[in-house]
Length: 363
Ligand SMILES: *[C@@H]1O[C@H](CO)[C@@H](O)[C@H](O)[C@H]1NC(C)=O
Ligand SMILES: *[C@@H]1O[C@H](CO)[C@@H](O)[C@H](O)[C@H]1NC(C)=O
Ligand SMILES: *[C@@H]1O[C@H](CO)[C@@H](O)[C@H](O)[C@H]1NC(C)=O
Ligand SMILES: *[C@@H]1O[C@H](CO)[C@@H](O)[C@H](O)[C@H]1NC(C)=O
Ligand SMILES: *[C@@H]1O[C@H](CO)[C@@H](O)[C@H](O)[C@H]1NC(C)=O
Ligand SMILES: *[C@@H]1O[C@H](CO)[C@@H](O)[C@H](O)[C@H]1NC(C)=O
Image (cartoon, rainbow, N blue to C red; front, top):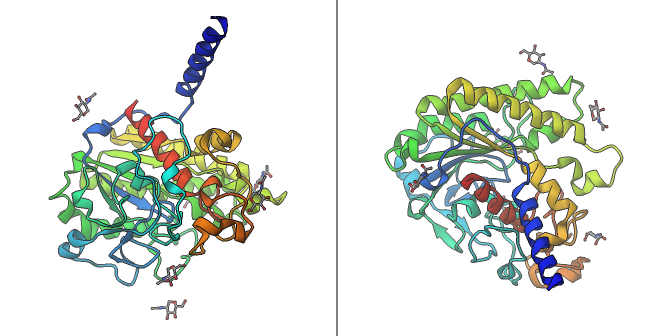
């Protein structure tokens, strides 16, 4: 009797602590259930491969193939050539996704060795093969470009074909918006942006006053977001920076780049600008605290089916790593690691994050 009551009490308190997880707040909440699609911008954490994209970098075009016509956009397909779990996004903590442990080769349709957060969140592009964004219940139009920073005003391009965040939005304004708005109304669209990961890494050794530098960076970001606002988009989801001071190489040194203070400064600048913008424009603007959630996962990895938060599997990019991970010196499969490689989270972590974002959006 007593012990079963104790068990129930433990369950209840677990449930309460789960519900009480603090997340960033923003002035307005949009109705996620009513949204028919996402238009996304960002970097490799968010990029999906398109049939009209630059291989390994984008859904459509690049800086040298900047213009596209309506037909190219509408016929473009999201490519998925990676392992994934068929089960729906977990509505609660969970679990090791058993579907993920297969011998399928890791490929390059994302930078995570499997579907990424935006594909899990929209449930668009998860199926192996090709998916038209228009065929998804929540359409995913993803203009994120792997390796992107916010603007060349602050940091150099990773490649000469890289489309910066500012240019992704200009490109969308010029070539995407008038076509897409005929298929996905502005009011039914959520704009999702995860950016800053490359910026903070590329600039971490600059000789600048960082709080001011990050305020400038995020100022440029919101000037660009204002372009979207003027096109009629009123719902925004921003994601803050992960604990990038804890990447495998940063954990191995006493002088991480970026360090924890820098990550906090950037995230503070982002939160402050988001709040300001939300109020000034009276839009629905929410910032998801990925930093807080990912830190929590790193503190209690076992609850999430993760056993290694310090390193990554050296064979992550090998074709047979799914079955032969031990041959690459990895005691466990790639999906039981937190980090996929030196700077990316595993698809497993993206899946957990997507579930958490969805639950948070529904609140
Ligand atoms: C959100 O949208 C759904 C689907 O359109 C609708 O059923 C629900 O009533 C809306 N909720 C609120 C709070 O407006
Ligand atoms: C994309 O990445 C794969 C795996 O690293 C590589 O084999 C391929 O050559 C890359 N393609 C381009 C165009 O860089
Ligand atoms: C882009 O960079 C590559 C090598 O990094 C170079 O070969 C190519 O000529 C450059 N293209 C242009 C148009 O500058
Ligand atoms: C921030 O922007 C201001 C105004 O453009 C400029 O004067 C200042 O040098 C910038 N500071 C940093 C650290 O980037
Ligand atoms: C992180 O780096 C910044 C800029 O160099 C420095 O001001 C700050 O003290 C550092 N923080 C830590 C915890 O080392
Ligand atoms: C984490 O993974 C790395 C790379 O496989 C390995 O070197 C390290 O020993 C692992 N750490 C733990 C605690 O298992």
